Image (cartoon, rainbow, N blue to C red):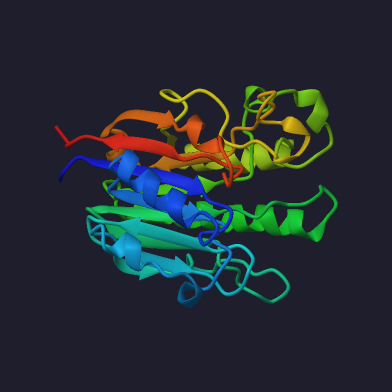
Length: 263
């Protein structure tokens, strides 16, 4: 297995962030980039400039909402446009999960449902979605303890109080509720490890409103949960905070993970 550099990034529109995606791929010399909130079907995003750099691109989107993608120069095979029994919302299985084998590691680009409010049907959907994903991750590991995969993306959960600028602001709201945090920790209970926090402190999202970025009033909600065989290969991770600056930035920033060869 070769060393790899993998990133996750909620781009908040692949077409609007097209040039920035190319710049991030080049600047960080990425092997794989998992993107979320592409907000377009595959046929509506011209990826020829990305492919010209030697990457393959797979996008799963059905309209201007949600959408996930994987960009890889180390192979992009065994594509899965949803995980087994992925829950639906209003009878639609939304484009929120995309998996593919890239350089010997199965990468899952995930855009976890927001939840909207604790008493909203979308919150129930969010918990069911996470429970189904966790069940299948557990099954994958039980079937093969050496399985190499990463569940990475926008989790729409702040697992710790320090993952938001002021926990009192979020009292009674989504992202920080006990039920969401238990859902997140259930993946770690199943044997996965969040592999960015140790190396990369800081926020990954700042709302466009109220000068949140200028005041550094952010949230850490973009994570990568790795199987044991992949966790052993992680040698570094960092948050590209600079990508939040300038005109036309996404409200999220890339989180980059470096994998070394297995000893």
